[in-house]
Length: 156
Image (tube, rainbow, N blue to C red; front, side):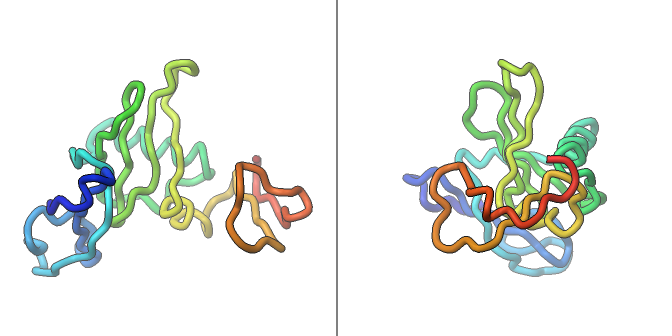
């Protein structure tokens, strides 16, 4: 991994889109591709998602979107990031899809989706999807006027 933007708490990693895996060196050891850069948060403590953790991640996405199909059979990784308790970025497909974190008050693990994760699931989700219309510019705050909600897919 090449360190860059240390002051901003980001690090640059590389992903091989051909092989669907993280590149640890200068190029992919399987196909020779230089791969594509993507950013993760510091300190860049990436480790493979294995064993029961795979089931945990898939279940979080199933609970959130009604399916885990975009992640089935894909390599996934965790990147430890600062938080109150367990907090990891979920990395797959050369992007940070979301944050897995343990909420001590609720006593359970939660998924905080990021834009690449929403993009990955937007066409296959069967619940928790809200379609907006008639909006322009930057979304300010955490509210959307009800008049701008065009459709809701599944439970929300």
